[in-house]
Image (cartoon, rainbow, N blue to C red; front, side, top):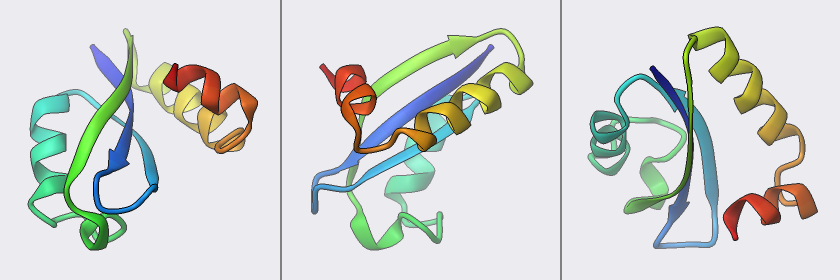
Length: 79
């Protein structure tokens, strides 16, 4: 099982989109400052998640969400 997720920084109004097979560990890694692109905006909270059976499906969905980041489609996911 793979999860596509959206994190929101509690420090700023930034979002991060990714995919993983273990959401708890991945969130801990982000909040420990071990991810270069997110360490400046710690702490992060999980605001959205979707499950997929394969890594390739999860990656495709991640790329789709990133394409409409900050648009109406992105905002509708967060509601």
